[in-house]
Image (cartoon, rainbow, N blue to C red; front, side, top):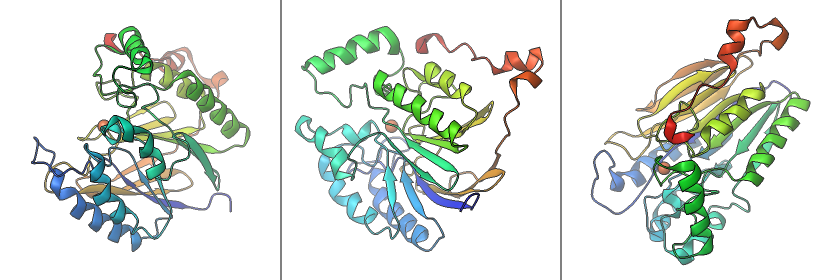
Length: 298
Ligand SMILES: [Fe+2]
């Protein structure tokens, strides 16, 4: 089964709500866009679908609209949590992950020679904690020390999850697997859409040439940049404008092929073979070191 092509679909920022349009967010159009995407996916060769977070905008009752549509998918699906997914009542926050079928909010799985790693960017966040609690105070302290002035609606991976991530990348390296990371939040290029501890996370990824891509939502306009061996791709938000956006992804031997639907851009991303350190000349070595992040992300 090694090296067999893998096909899957990606949907980001459905962000449904029964609310009037807000700037580019056309909340009430999301169910129809999602229904059409699910129909297209069911007719495709996608083996699974990844939902990159912000399934709803706010209010737990919004899940009653999008989940029945999602359940029409004929093949398996995976979710990562976005900040808006937890913009529900305090008593409902703990119920969101089980509602999406998640026993744990970060997890991994292997398929052929790939390892898929799903992260929880709300690990340390205001979205996941309830105001007035000790946990919220801890987040406030973390944010003041490491987050501000990055927006409060971002989050960070905590110590336990960071160690788990690094362990996953060590296993992938030993097993000669390629790794792909899914998270709602971006980590690169450094911007207001990135996790509070993005520079540290990128410095981990820099060390592991098995990581071929970081896929995220959250940045509705989309974005893309390659850094060393990793392609960092923000998928456009389905909720924006009258036109839908989602993608089909094909993992081939030497490339990651993205077929954009609606507003999403089609791309061919080469899977770069890592250059052994001993073959690198000084200028290349310089390029391999982490760029200085903007002040607010330090
Ligand atoms: Fe988001």
